[in-house]
Length: 203
Image (tube, rainbow, N blue to C red):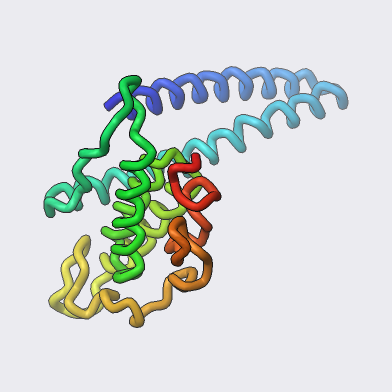
């Protein structure tokens, strides 16, 4: 809930800035001189880029929340039972052990979006946001592919009986054995570990 409130407030502030900057850019362009028009166009570029980035990020969050709701309905959301320090931060050893489990799970079934979703959570618990985002994007991509009906009996939003459930049915973006993982094995997200060292605990 706190993350949603933070995101909403940040988005509202950005929208206000975009509107303010855009209005100033339009005023400069209306002034009509070469200098003001040039400045006006330059000022308008930032809001356009910002709106695009905000839209893409909002789409990502919305799709991730859709996956979370579906996984929650199935009873497959990871339980937050990680040990924490007195300050409330997740214990590194606990996050390390959880990541190892999620990594092995994803290596066994690399075409299951649920495994990638749980791996993204493990990355996030290890405070490795870039890899967490990549793993979540992979989960979204796999979910979209399994949601496409492949037969008359397939139901949108769920994997059909002929959906990509075999690790060899549809190769993922990277082979599970391509890059050393956090424990010296392969990392399904295509990176050495959540922290770039031997384990997520190095973050």
